[in-house]
Amino acid sequence: KKVCVIGLGYIGLPTATVLAHNGFEVHGVDINEKAVELINNGQVHIYEPDLDIMVKKAVESGNLKASVVPEKADVFIIAVPTPFKENHKPDLTYVEQATRSISPYLEPGNIVILESTSPVGTTEKVAEWILEERADLSIDENHEKRIFVSHCPERVLPGKILKELIENDRIIGGINEESTKRTVEFYKNFVKGKILETNARTAELSKLTENAFRDVNIAFANELSMICDELNINVWELINLANHHPRVNILQPGPGVGGHCIAVDPWFIVDAAPETAKLLRTARMVNDSKPYFIIEKIKEATKNLQNPTIACLGLAFKANVDDLRESPAVKIVKELSAIYDQTIYVAEPHIEDIPKDLLELNVQLVKTEDAIEKADVVVLLVDHDCFKIIEKKALSNKIVIDTRGVLPITSNIEVSMTI
Ligand code: SAJ
Image 1: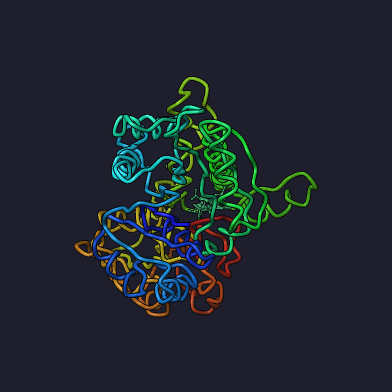
Image 2: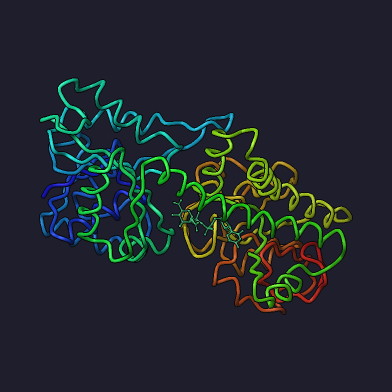
């Protein structure tokens, strides 16, 4: 069987690779020519543990090839981004382009699977776009040129993608029962987790709900941290105590919510039910406001210092990854460089070069020890394991603002404290 995967990013490339390892002939497609060239050379353009080795093997086996144009196949998987526009409305341009780009290659009996996290109704739209391009095909039962269309939302956690791709339970919802059935048969080839069947719209909302659930829970922790700051209570101790209750499990506060999923997906629900999704909208706003709360805390902590030198530890959107997309840490560093005249020193051991959008600012990427040594104020923004071993004596006489509660500080407040 042959599979054509559209979009060779964090989801598409690992999926294409796993399929190739399971004996499928895989044709990967991406608009990024550089990525295509790298993949065909057995290399990768993104970092994910073990992905480089797996891609190399898949390409060497002859089962994985990449190109900028699709080819005929039995199964088509769409794994392209679904960002939002300025007004938090979903932007389906990439899904539409991908769908229209595969349409000329479709043949009766083919399955088209949308893996991109999508607003409710998108899978049905995919079917409509195909039929607009191909009047000869049909989604109707008994039609001799029938094709099948389903949603199977990706649910993998960056950093654990290759494991979760195989082990996680999957939800599959087709635009009709036969589409669901055929898509389930396909995923059974490589998924070890349970495969749960539903319709396309429920599958779409289910994925959005999972990320909205996490967003609301993180917002709860973030709001608590701001309440604790006001009441002069240590939020980490508070959460630890409350979590001893058998039915309480509070997540960890931080400088905000980053990444390209949790900060985006709940808006698709809000957009679909704007009057009703009050809690979800508020959670988004709480999490989006958190970086500015941290900046205010930094300003407050430095108000009596002349030209303070600030070191920020971490730029990634979460612990132990190199991914800077929508990172609250990057947002905070940018704001700080606009507020302070002194160079802002940044330590991010997971990247080698300073990202483009910080290049023109007065920001310098340095080693963790150097950043701390130079600083009057140390701001910890990401709970990378490598920061957890920082010793107390390295921080003596510094103002320490720890947004993740990992540094050895004894003060009672979450942020702005002097050792
Ligand atoms: N965060 C906190 N406190 C916490 C947990 C997370 O502040 O207690 C922050 C992180 O630092 C990060 C953000 O939230 O900035 C999101 O991180 P995450 O680890 O919760 O999630 P992602 O974005 O890496 O991946 C999520 C996952 N969804 C869920 O756990 C419900 C993943 O399974 C999805 O596949 C992925 O979104 C996706 O692609 O949709």
